Image (cartoon, rainbow, N blue to C red; front, side):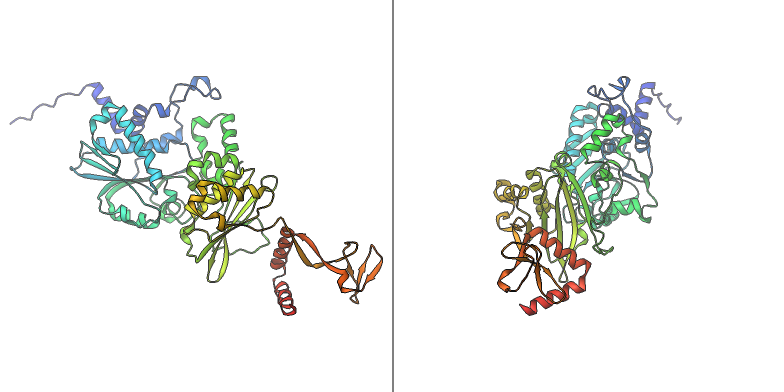
Length: 493
């Protein structure tokens, strides 16, 4: 029996088929609005407005067909457009057996929810997508296509047990915001991944260097991965000098951790100290973060990204916070310590410059409620001057009152008061600092006389902050002498 002659396809059908198979053209057509320069950008060339401008680096990201792909970049590069387009394209062109599975994963539901919402809106606004999608259960996170493919949308969860990653047979795995991913969930996904499956992991560095995302980017673990590492400035939207300066200003300058990670797409500085005279152990995790009012304001809906700390590495008996509160030129400095094997170890230092009291209280509350593995046992703050308004906000704001018992937990360190300094002696009558001679006599240079009576010699009273700072410096600079002196004073007492 002769073979039936195959009917010819039209040019339009051929073009449409190529459009569906080529991710670059797929995105340009179905995500045209997202890739078009808006008309409210007078800082960009006039001929750009209303046209699609896609940089060479963005095209490379869209056209990469490698089995394992890593997007480790700054923000605002259309990574999410590529992710959403990949989900839709894979479901539409799938040719495998019915019941095929793919996995879209994020560390938390707050990462996944916007993607689900945008995919649903794109399906409803695009008749072709609406025709190809069989059902979309957003509550469960199941997107099923008439081609037989099912996309499962799951989150790792705060503690990362791996439970949500198993029981699937995925031929494609896409992960977003993977800088916050856990090793346990990554390992579980390797059991879910079918032989020959494709993987796309996207995210922005956050300074935490224990995640699989970091290891894929920076270690031999990523040798088989195709890596795309670009700053935000490859996006044509940021090509003008005004746009670049706005980015710098909104991230607190070019030297902040936020700028290095979120804009340049670099891993930033995980551990360094503002006080190099104080010894630190290089093997212990230590993080430093600098914040400004602008940086906090643009991140109010995503403080977990702004305040990401490598807490998974720490097994502690307790956590405490100390804070020297300020505004400008003296900033607020928060110190976080954890107790391990009887020692208090500094874990993080957070500097806030020119930040209003409410935002500073928000940072303290978010660290306590969402970042640290256990709630703080004590929050000791410098509550005088500018610090009083921050302390009062924690104590009296209804939102913070519902979160934790800050009226008891957040305490005033009393730095605004004065403390007796036994190292400095005054003449009671004229309040002049006394000078001691080699033979042990106390001399008042103002009265030009020897002070004989013990009741005429009193301790100086200095600012508590000044006294404690001096004690701390002495303790670190002359540790053995300082401890011997404290022991002698305790014996005399």
